[in-house]
Image: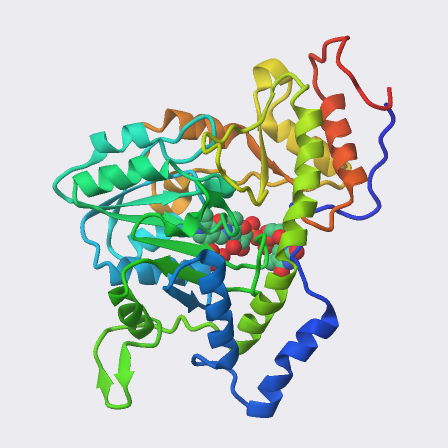
Length: 386
Ligand code: T4K
């Protein structure tokens, strides 16, 4: 099989943009009103749209996902220890440690890489105040089991839902589980508001607290009732969110088509392991396309495959390596944690390029490269183009 290097780089994702004209039309009112931030009209409109989208009465917008998570932790007044996953973007762990909480790392499942709910209870101590789980790559955690553990032990349950915008589980938006869910609308996500984030929750009393925390704790011009920060979403972000919401379904449909090509081709290759979400009733969003490279069956390691793809101008990413707890900034504090599956996964995971505007021929070519580099391809394997 002869494969040529691509003329321009293919990155793991490409930010979704609405049509130029639709954004210009949307931001025109900012020039009319000179209102740029601090809960303006576009902020209000976006918040209302998201209440419909998430089927929730309570949505708080934030300038980014990380500060949204930070606010959730502050508003829930957590203390002591929080059980969490190390297989995530560093934001999840940093949000805990920056709030003087001690993360207690739980292992993940080898099927969909979410926190292993069967291992959570053993980690609960009198110091535990919450569970912070991540719907990683767009795969829902075992939400009911985590909810019942949290209830039994009187713990708060937070979902880092940065990856699951648009996902439905059991016919409901995934936003409606746990005490609070944080969504990221960063440029790299399936849905973006340039930067941005939202908190979705059921308790109406949280709304006031979150609004205070995200605006310096200012209750009114003369009263500061909380030690808060600035996490407000501005009008340009809200405008981008509103425009991108319109194109969201077609974004997901395009991703689904690409994911189908990846799945059909890659499942045939020895040593390329595809995730299996146990949440069968999910409406998926194809936020990421992770593969696990099992070097004993594939013949080369994840890192070698990463380099081979780069030789063709294809830049996959090692999301999420290293585990957050093994990051330099944590100074080996968690080396002893029993995280066998998480460590195995982080060494072998590779997320392949996926985004709505990606050409299906490129996806086919990426599969060809992965297939061509398998050292143990059986003779009978169907190799298109050979
Ligand atoms: N929790 C979880 C589980 C998360 O994954 C994240 C964020 C958070 C919390 C925090 O949410 P935010 O505060 O970010 O809202 C990226 C993103 O910056 C980060 O948002 C994301 N997770 C993480 C998984 O990925 P990098 O350092 O890998 O991004 P970068 O700049 O290398 O971009 C990746 C690719 O995206 C580029 O190769 C091309 C494309 N891209 C990027 C940017 C910035 C674009 O096409 N346009 C752009 O503007 O972290």
